[in-house]
Length: 319
Ligand code: MTE
Image (tube, rainbow, N blue to C red; front, side, top):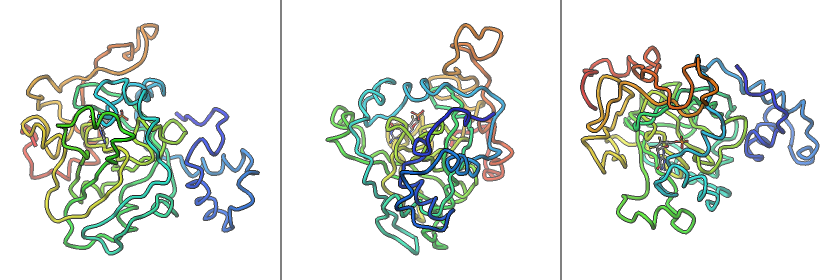
């Protein structure tokens, strides 16, 4: 299954500067002067580099559903609020502070942070803790590529992430002053190094829309969606387990690990099944008509890839 059949321009796929950096590497030449003349065949070349075997045996959620039914509390708590309000967020210039137990700390301009990293498409299941799910074609790369670039020191055990905290452009922040802004998340270092853990800069063949976490976000497909922190401005390597927003708010409901687990219910609802977002009643006969439920698989279907990370843990317990 590929989504690259429509006539998209190269500039639709990645932020232009990211694309040009890649072109410089691919072509070994300065992008200056050629940028406005790149033909679609060049675009096709780049796309070749973006295809991977990461896919799932399920229908891809429509782009309109994945970009209009969102959780991004910085823009409001309603599912439609992020789409309505996120265009206010300025995503360029964008810098990411990398600090803590790293050899190359600093404030990285996004282009510098991503330079030399090839982008690839990965179709992942996405399971929200609220018991709904989507299937999303992300564009990005393994988080470990950034970790390699910044040089993780041997004492580091965790990676902490932080979202932009700019109330003037994020109307949900002022509207919800008791929420512990900024949104923060974290992973154990070995989780972060698992090849499935991804930094996404695009989806559906285009740059990430603001409401989905532009210009870069985490995607951790075996964990509940709230671990996949959006619009990242800080990455910190640490030797202590970092605080995470939802764990601070309701520790009995949202654990640090929060691996998708159909056998451990949320205190207020079952996690055994999920509501598949999208589809329509015209697809009756397929399991994907609106409101359809499917059984939630252990680790959201990624058990083979990640179960060994948790070999000492009792999977019938809440973490
Ligand atoms: N990141 C930030 N900064 N703020 C948020 O409110 N919501 C999380 C996660 N990342 C959230 C966030 C939750 S609960 C989910 S389910 C996913 O983003 C939703 O991602 P999507 O809107 O791209 O589907």
